[in-house]
Image (cartoon, rainbow, N blue to C red; front, side):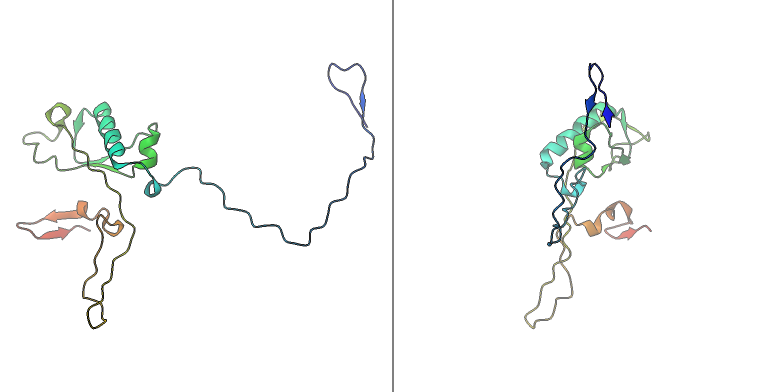
Length: 165
């Protein structure tokens, strides 16, 4: 077999048979493959400090918002810190500031950012003195089980709350 290289004067000759060692037959099975490394970090696993997240959200709101209305705010895809560390941004409670318009202009208010991480622990169960569980379960708030529930609550007259379906 002849193989020639560019800019060579003479062709390189490779013999047909090379002395190649035979593969060794393994008696043990190969070790299991490790799972692939994640390409990105899930939001609930993010390790950023809450203060850093608050400042990043405040900067993002100052740079993009001309007005504020209740509802979700899209997280800009070019801001990798927010994409990796924030699951949702929601503007709420603007109705107490808005009297005559439906929109709250950016110069009328300074937004207050509350950042929190949902706990994924289930309810805690305590046993009474007789060894029977109490008639209630205790949850550490903010809990994942209640995520989004507050937004669906409507306050009737008084302290009663009704959950919208």
